[in-house]
Length: 112
Image (cartoon, rainbow, N blue to C red):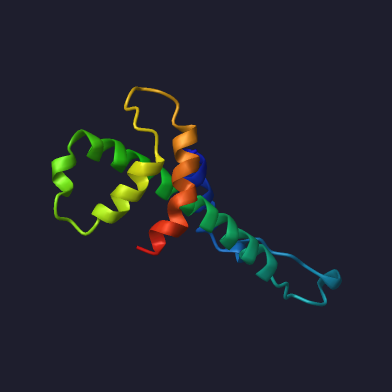
């Protein structure tokens, strides 16, 4: 998931105007790529959500191993929210369900 999201972000970083189009048999030399740019922006926003979900899962798993590191930090509220939703099992296992749950938390975390 993370590699796919990063590849999407790399692709979205390229200007859509690199693709050229000749329209009207060369009479017009202008072609708007606004719809492609808007679509690419939406895909980039979704990819960012996936990257942030991966970071959140990794951070929560690490902080569960050293909870004392969060005693008086302002980020404690965000950790408590994520900690309540993510699977507490720290064993080596597929994290797909955790990543989906973390992606679902992004809007709530933005409010903190």
